[in-house]
Length: 439
Image 1 (tube, helix red, strand yellow):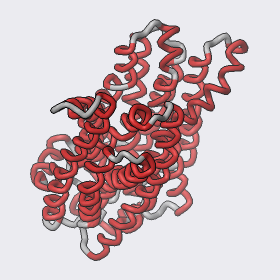
Image 2 (cartoon, one colour; image 1 turned 180 degrees about the horizontal axis):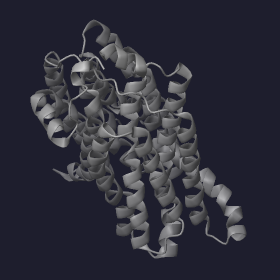
Image 3 (cartoon, one colour; image 1 turned 45 degrees about the horizontal axis):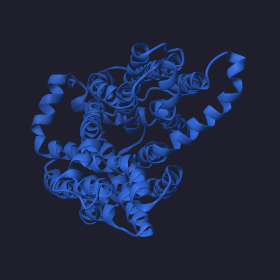
Image 4 (cartoon, rainbow, N blue to C red; image 1 turned 180 degrees about the vertical axis):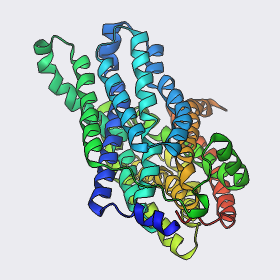
């Protein structure tokens, strides 16, 4: 029976599997634009709607990330139980329509409701994508499609602003035609591609059969069963999931504060700082997205169930050297070079956890595990990271106000790197006790 299920899962042609991966990747890219577009439009929105900085911060930060994180687990529970294609399409339509509706917002409350819709809709995407890709491809072939999907995170963190700026430039001359402010037209325009991609996904993608072995076909997928599974493997999953959140404290701190550090400490103007940091680090992040899965699968061939933890341990060893040192380098060229290496190292946690879930966790729990990973990264990274860096920079007195951010980022690296090393050593040891999953 197990082989029958596997053969049915393999029944989809290679082209159809890769069409699904490409569409999922494009949806992921679209989600970044819709998520970060308010950052680009903050000033005109503030003027037109009379919003203060605190309200804008809530709309762009905690008001989105907390709901995005908390919605992930119950949505992932549905993804592990019901047809993923339908749930994913519902999520895409929800976030696209609420992005468009944001263009018609009349105040803070209506815009906050729209942002809530974007957060809930986008929370469906990655857990569904992780589960779908795992069932489209056999164990040995999952790293490449997962790396393709995850590569968007390395590109669109800064690329979403480029796309948004281009759309805003197009919207400007059309404001009289549509009798709408450019920022409103921009929100409408960036919401439309998601609906088009949803239509393509509906027509071109088939729901794959879940890869479950015969003895697990009757297994339960409820929250209680998931909790029992986690308890039975807690010594592995607690440090494994915690490591992603720890990494994000420093990993998010880099793009959040490095442009400001370049302005305050190295004499850049804001646009120069953005280009200097973005153009150097984006290729490094993209390289890391593909390098780390390649390394993990090389290790996996020799040591089953150990590939992702071992590769993450190697990344943690590199982080132990680079993270505390890089932010405090005074020479600008060397600083940017070291931060580029730091971004490449951080890329390991962007892709290897989800590849790990696909390798050593049952199909029925992969969506929930991906959601827990996002919860850890969002709550620790977005909720704690930027503020913690500011706080660490003020401890003991910096050698000047201008250097507080670089000192705080360095201290965050000094705090995070040893913890990453410890968690990955524990994970590598515990990975030997994981039961093989053949789905």
